Length: 449
Image 1 (spheres, rainbow, N blue to C red):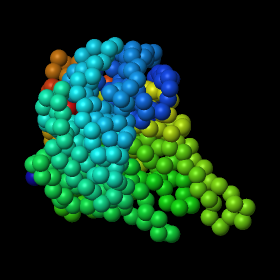
Image 2: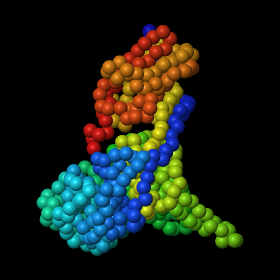
Image 3: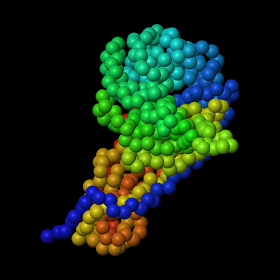
Image 4: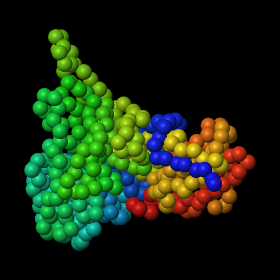
């Protein structure tokens, strides 16, 4: 009888992961006072206190400003691009729509006043736009006719709606002192579903939150440092049951987290500078941490952590598209490439009496998949990925391994760290004179945007 015993307990972990944030290019944005960024096509739309600047990023090494427009219609502390339309919300109670089919000359289309206090980003939802309105909660605006938008309803939250994220007709609001979850299936009658208060530090100060991003059943919330600390928090919260969210983990992040954007295996956190009095200091010493961009590996939710970081001034917003990370500070656009191998191998509790290649999971895969194999004795292993044309696109394992069962994470990229397109790929295992293969179906992230 064949002897194959495979457990789920991981006995030994060997990380081959290496990643870094490489600077690609950047440009100073005249007049500064930048609040937000949205990337669509070959353009970055940068919202400033009193204007909208549009930057051509088709060549990321040398981005170029193609237009900068001043005035009420163009003020954007929050931006969302929907095809040829730009939705902008202005700090102080004004929402406008622009035609940006020609980025060199955006044209005003319509506008509507909203309750005072509109802050930060807006997010499109079907025919509506949802705005965080600070002390007025959220506003739902009908944009079916871009020349005549109108407010459908408001929902007043208990705190200050700083930012929000919309997913499956639920709105997740970073409400300063809590996370609020609101059902907007009926835009005229939004209903509060659940909430989770932000924790307090040891001296009773609330860890205020400023941004939220939701992936699957998890909310990633950026929150300030505790007293006597210059490392802030990225809270990971389960929202599987939106009526009863709960904390899963906390990642400490250098500086004071201000914004968060999730893509692939990572949460990208933008932080501002942080100062704090040093505890029990008789000389009134002050602790300091610079602002910057922090990449948090979130694939293992309960063991997430910062894997790479770049220090800079206050990061006002982050946007990720393909393999590039776009960052805006007070007065600049900076572009980074996140370079990582994405290869991680773990040895599981299990024994086999022959070379085996087990089913990978998940399959089909979006962000990546675990590939599992077993060998009965110490030997050389070659684990590779091929496309349907028979070209080898990625080498995952090439070396000697002890007897046992292993799993390897493939990130859906080639050996040059470039995302691979959707399609069928073949995982090939060569060990002990055996050659085994399994099919993997990859779904590109572009198909789910």
